[in-house]
Structures are given as C-alpha cells and as structure tokens.
Image (tube, rainbow over all chains, first blue to last red; front, side, top):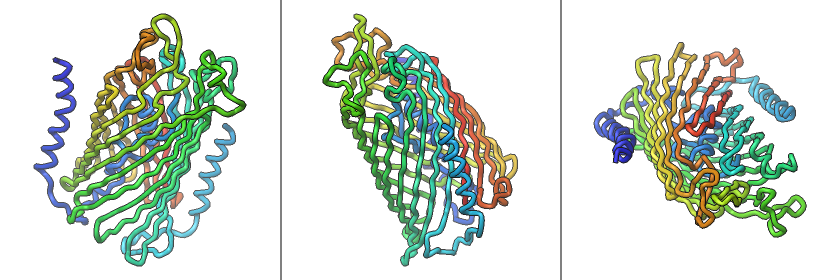
Length: 78
Length: 399
C-alpha cells in the first residue's frame, strides 16, 4: 500500500504542478518579447552534447523514450 | 584507434577549412534561393563503466566497458519559390567499444562477437517549414551497423504552430527494422546454430513508434513541453549470448516474449530566472507490458557567468521496477516460460550527476569566427546494483 502511495506521489505531484502551470498562467508572448525564450540554453529539445549519455541510459535502463533519445535501432548488447 | 583519432582530427580541420572565408547572412529577412550552410556539429564522447552483473555471464561477472563515440552532422537550407524553408541534415557517427563480458561469449578466442567492435550510423533528414502557415513536415532515414547487429530506420514528422506562435503540436512516426546475428555462447553451439565460415544466422526485430508532443510558451520566461510515445516492438527481443543459469545448475540463453509495448510520458519545463539563471527540469513516467514501471527526474541549473559563458550542474534520479521475467544468477526454474538475468531489467534506482560548461562568444570560440560554441559535459552514473560509469562529452558547433 505504501508503495502505491509513493508511486502516486512520485507520478502525480509533477503532473499536477504541470497542469496547474499550463492552464493558469499562459500569457501571450510577442516575437519581440522572446529574447529569453530564444536563448540557446532554453531549447526544449535534448542537446547535442547529451547524445551519448541518452544512448547509454536507454541501454542501461529498462525504460526509454520521451526525451529525444532513441527508442530503437542499434544493439546496446554490451 | 589511431585511425579513428586521425579521422576525427581530420573532420575538425575540414570543418575549419571549409568555413574559413566569408560570413553568414544574419539578416532574418534574407531568404537564400541557393542552398546555404546553417550549422554543423561535432560531438565526441568517452564512456567507461564497471560493475559485476554482466548479462553475458548470467548476471555475474565484469560489466567493464569503454566506448568512444564521434559524430558529425551538417545542416543546410534553402527557400523555395513559395517561401517555404527546406532544411537538409546529414549525420554520420562512429562508436568504438570494448567489452569485458563479450569476451566470455567464446573465451577461447579474442575475436568473438563484439569483445571490441565499431558501430557506424549514418542518417539523413529533410524538413519543409511554411512560416506563414506555421507548419513543418519532414522525413528521415537512418542506418546502423556493427558486427552482430544491423538496423534500418525511417521516420516522418509533422508540426503545427498555433496562430500566436506560442504553442506547437508535433507528431512523429518511426520504424526500425533490425537484424540480430545469432551468436550463441560457445558451450551452447550445436551444428545447427554454429557459425559457418564468417556467416551467422540472423533474425528480425522491428520497432514502431508514434510520438505526440505539445510545446507551450507560458510567459516571457517559461516554456514547457508535454511528450508522449507509444512504442511497439516485435521479433527477437532478447540477445542470443545472454546466458541464464538455472536453479539446477544448467545453462541456457535468455528467452523473452516476442512483443513489447512501451508507453513513456514526459514533461519538460525551462524557466529563465532573472538574467543569470535557467532552470531546466524534465520528468518521465514509463510503463511497459513486461512489468517495468519507472520514473525519471532531471534538474539542471544553467548559471550564466557572462552572457557568453555558462556552467550547468545537473542531477538525474531514476528508478524502475523489475521486468516480470528477471531473476538473478541460478534463480530461474527450468520450467519458466520466459527468463533473463540481465540486470538492466532488474529493480534498481540510479543517480546521475555532473556539470556542463558552455562558451559561445560573439567573435567565435578561440576567435575562430565560425566556431559558434563549445560545450563540455561530464557526468557520473551510479546504480544501486553496483554498476557505475563516467562519461565526458564535447560538442563543437559551427555556424
């Protein structure tokens, strides 16, 4: 039972925070106001320098995906 | 190894030479009708791991492994007569690895499958962006080959921005058609499955995935991304040289179901605090029908020491439950339908932490005009099973 509760806490809290953020605080932003959003380090995709670490994580862990890493192709045998 | 190093140095010099004259157009209104260079990246990594639960030896034995990877990608673009932007990408990667456990497939030889191997993985891609409509479509092809594994991949993608360009819905479909060489542990080879000359029998593994993501600007400082995937695999999903030792002391190779359905759901949020800090957060919940449930959370803080120099400490926590088919060394019963002693499918948690360093001065890194940025990143990874690894990566970006 406590496992179930901790599972719900781990998965539910971030989801709840995300939904609250998403629906409550969207403010239209014009192109000229996007200087911070356009900063190279604000990119929402995974970065090139993370490429190999995403690969090894997908090999060394049972889970993969939803992070810009590969979900197939290549062995990862070792 | 020397050849690989020389190749990489050669690639670096070629890039420098290719862009040593002229300067790019930076005016956003400029619409080149001829193919123009947009960006090139060189990424090099060194990875080393150790542990004592190698799958090749049935969940016991050294997991020592080193991997050197190098890749180069190039992006060029052109506008067509209808003002749609076409971008073309080409990517070529080489990994060279050595693995202590793979030596145990056939301990009598040192040239057995994958004790040391080189993987080549080229890919190409195309996208067409209609800035007026806010749509992007694209497609790509990829190939990966190593001694005992070949993979051919294809993907298509589509994206639509909202009218105010503050949100974007993206969809991607991918397929990987793989071939696994059936290289068995030496003591389990029979005349029917032994190698004939240099040829091994092969079998197929296919992966199909669909991905939907939604990115949204919340305000001038915050943007988030929801990402969901559905991944279906079919075919031979184990590996023929992963031993399993049963309770009675007999040995076999892992046997896993021929299908697997994976559902990862992720969210990413990037928040610019003041002028000097960016917090990047990523969380993923994952479930599959082999019984693995997992959660992963990564936090990074970009500290901008100057507008062009930043340091990024990061931390990632990961935990998973065990696959239904996992049991350690000599714990499976011979009567079990499916079995594996691969600790990557066991119950564990892991911590990954380190830091990155990025420099992107306006006059170019080391005053080389087209060397737009240099990024260096180091991380240490530790599993509760005892496996640990270190990785260092370098990204040079040319524009």
